Image (cartoon, rainbow, N blue to C red; front, side):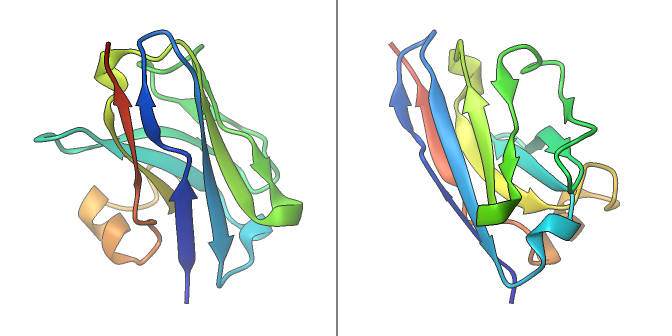
Length: 126
């Protein structure tokens, strides 16, 4: 049973930083690409970043490039999202997801695969 547990969300001022964590279990973490996907209130899901099993071939959506990083610690089955220079438009529920962007035909199929966590809320507000 795939399990992904996100943590680290919270309320932060614009320009602040936050570090999200995702602890994985139920599969061989080091064999899978991993992603972060976010969903703002009233909006559809938006892919944020992904990387290969070894931590190489990192990709970011243009909205976060240069501000976010997506390291992984395979020894501890953990994926991170380091967020700097946060903006109000970054406010969303952030999901950890097994797989990379483009391996599923749509977000719902991806979510239904059981490869998303429960999400952690990030709120950027003054």
